[in-house]
Length: 272
Image (cartoon, rainbow, N blue to C red):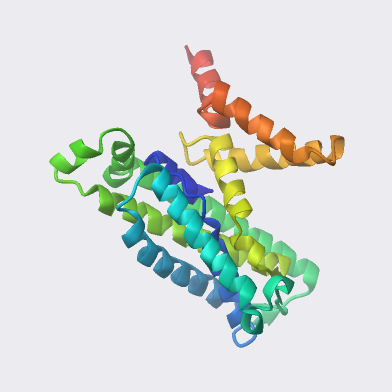
């Protein structure tokens, strides 16, 4: 979600960003049988996702708005189709089971391993959150907003809008790859569904719900998303997706700043 936030700052939406989650997850699935070490698998997943983000980004940063979003979607669906059809390698929709992993060379019990993974995920989430916060406050991060509102002026100032967007795109790919690796290590099962367009839709949903005004937005959006989904599924099991869609529609119409925008406006009101 933090990666989607960076792109939203530039006024761009990726409808296929889940492909980087799939790359990170399948990196773990393919390499874990030979190298089951978490401390090696995470950097490798990040590296491969970053490399793919750079290759794709060099092509995509030439486009804007709906073209940017739909090209991301198309590439994601190509990867999804490959993962689904190459059964001999990926096991198709059956997916790949991941054996027990080691942490610094030590094999742990399932319950202990789950707590360790939770700690790693929490540490990385906080670390990436602080990184994105610092990046958005930097000159290059502030230039993202210029792409959304006055790209031509950026170019006149000697700032390459494509380079700024490419850096943000590659950084978002890196975080997506790490996220996918963590998902695979936690669930111990990887399927092509990770690259499907609905997975990307959830990421965009959460980012918009949380708001792009702060690095805290995606965390608020993820919390709100899970709460709405759990209670909606409990109340109306057959129509919880419709409730999620209704919530997103209300946010777009009445609170375009998302949860973060609502909270920040209330805090400013109290301060005044």
